[in-house]
Each structure stands twice: as structure tokens, then as C-alpha cells.
Length: 504
Image (cartoon, rainbow, N blue to C red; front, side):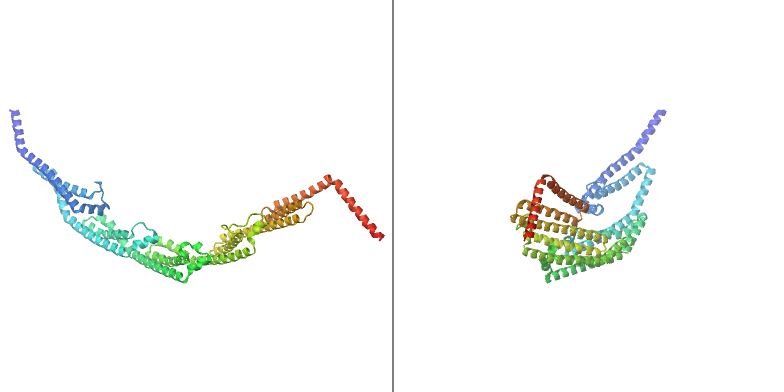
């Protein structure tokens, strides 16, 4: 009997709870299917209307294929889980499990209480998007009409579109301005405080940034206008033709003197503009060192200009003097000097003649003196001293080469004179004379160059002593009988002359 009673109670419980369980399972299954269908419909709507792609571009920056960053996927999954929460609430309520349904009901209550705030935030986000898109379109169109990318790209070699960059900047600045209002509407106070503080600092600095940008833009435009005016004016007065005549085109390149001077004027105008623009930012940690650097550069501009003027004038004068000297030496027949002293053939038509080389050396000498003065104008005392020492050393080297060249000329002249004299052993004496003059002039040249004076003096003394000793040995040993016979003949001739003189 007890066992029969337990089976009856179990059958009664099953009879009571089986309809509820089946109803709960039906709610769960049909609710899950409904959630899947609604999520699929939302996904299809987002794809067909393009809202999903727009959300990806707006939130992520581009269309991402990964589900971790796919906003479209996140939205549809959120709707699916929201419907499933309602389904679970109905499932547990049918089963009578109030302990489980109470927290879910509280969650749904909070969610639905947050829905108006969420809708208000969505409306603000939509307004921000419309305003940001409109302003971005206006900025891009205006800068496109002004051809800003072509002008900046031509002079600065930019590969990134400045128009697109400025448009994107305006776009995100609008969102940044709306962000505190959106966070306040959503009651996200934990995020609102730091964002509001950041925005306050940005807005406090924004007028300074705008002022600096206006100063820089106007100054740059003014510098460009003045540069073109100066360049065109110099072209009109013939500065480029004059630079070609004096040879400055080799220094300034394809821009010409007009382009270089226009660039100098552009830099002179742009430096004060940069200083004023940095001061307008009022960021002492950044602007003070930059302003000090630019002020130092601005203070050094007169010295730089004076040094450049000295170098340019020296180059012009040096070119003129070098041309005059080259022409004068060519007229005097200096180009045949190497062939005359036996060091080479006359200059070939395609190469530089000796007179042109001398003219070039004169130009280098003038530029060295100009470099010394330019370094002093710039305050580079050590550089001026080094260039001066190098100039003095080069002068010694040049004077030594001149002495050696004169020695070669005299050696060749003495050799030809002795060979044409018809004397006994003329060839031997010509070779000896040529060798002696070359050795003497080489020693003098090396001494003038300052290259090992003591060694040169010692070598020359030893060489002269060796020659004297060799002559003495030759006369004392091998030529002793010949020297005695010649001496007896000389004494006999003197006696004969004396006898003739006394008899007369």
C-alpha cells in the first residue's frame, strides 16, 4: 500500500507539471527560433541599407571582416540575446521558478528604463554624424576648389592628401564636441568627467591654435607672393643673364640667381612668421626653445648675408681676374711652357691649357681669402684660422713649384747653350749642368715649401762634399801624372813670358 501511494503521488505530480514543462519548452524553442529570425532580419536590413558598413567605418575606421570588430555582427548578436532574455523570463515563469525570474525581471526593468536615454544618445549621435559629415564635405569642397593639395604637394613633395586630412580632422572634432553631451545623456559619469576635462583643455588651447594657424597661413601666403614678385622682377631686369656671364649659373644651378634670391627673401619673411606663430600658441615648454632658436637664427642673418655677399663678390671678381690672367698668359705663349722645359707636350684642344689652370688657381686663391673673411663675419674664428694657415701653406707650395719650374727652365737653357757651344765634352758638361741646376732648384723649392729643411740642407751639403772629395780623389790618384805635366807646362809658359819681357 505505501508503495502504491508513492506511485500515485508521482503520477499526480507528473500530471500537474507536465503541461507546464511542455509549455516552457515550447516557449524556449519558439523564442529561440524567433530570436534567430529577428537577428537575421536585422542583419539583412543593415546590409541592404548600408548602415552596417557605415557603422564599421564610423566606429572602427574601415570594414572589418573579423567578428571581434564587426559592429554589424555585434548589433545583431545583442538583439538576439535581448530577445533570449525575454524568452528565458517566460520559460522560468511558466515553470514557476520565481527565484530565477526576479533578477531577470530587474535586469529587463533597468534595460527598459535605460532605453529612453539610449534613444536620446542615439539621436545626439545621429545629429553629430550629420553635422560632421556636412562640415567635412564643405571643407573638402572648399580646399578642392583652392587646389591646396597641388600647391602644397608641388613645393613640399607630399604623398598624403592634406585636403582629406583636414576634412577628417573637422569630422572627428565635431564628434569630440558632442561626446560630453552623449555621455551625459547616457548617465556615464565615470567617463564624462575625464572627457569633459580633456575637452575643456582643448577648447582653452583651440583659440591659440587657430591664431597660430592664421598667422602661419597669412605669413606663408605673403612670403610666397613676395618671393614670386622678387623672382619675376629679377628675371625681368636680366639677373639670370648676368649670372651666366660671370659664371654664377654653375653655383646656383638650374634655379638661377633670381630663384635663389627669391628663396632667400621667402625664408627671411617666413622666420619671423614662425616666431609669431609659436608665440601665439602660448605653450612655453614648446615655444620657448623654438622661439629662442629662431631668434638666434634671425640675429645671425646679417652676418650670414654679409658672408654670402663676400663669397659672391669674391667669386665674381675672381672669375674676372682669372679670365684676364688666362688670356694674358695665353697671349704671352705660356701654354707652350711645359714643352719648352721638356715636361710634356702642348695642351690638347679638349683639355685645360696651362694658362687656364693658372687662372683657376687664381680663382681658388681669391675664394680662399674670401672664405677667411666670410668665416670671420660669421664668428667662426677657428675656421678662419685654419683656412688662413692652409692658404699660407698653399702659397709656400705654389712658390716652391714656381721656383722648381724656373729651375727646370734654366736647366734646359743651360743644357742647350752648352750643347751648342761646340766645346770639348759639351754633352757631358750639358748633362752635368742640367743635373746640378735641377738639384739646386729642387732643394730651394723644397726648402721654400718647408718640407724637412734640415734634411735638405744636410743632403745638399753631403752631396757637394761628395763631389769635392770625388774630384780630389780623381786628381790625386788617377790624374796625378796628368796634373803634374799640366802644372809643369804652365810654369814653363810663365818663365818664357817673363824672359821675353826682360829681354825686351
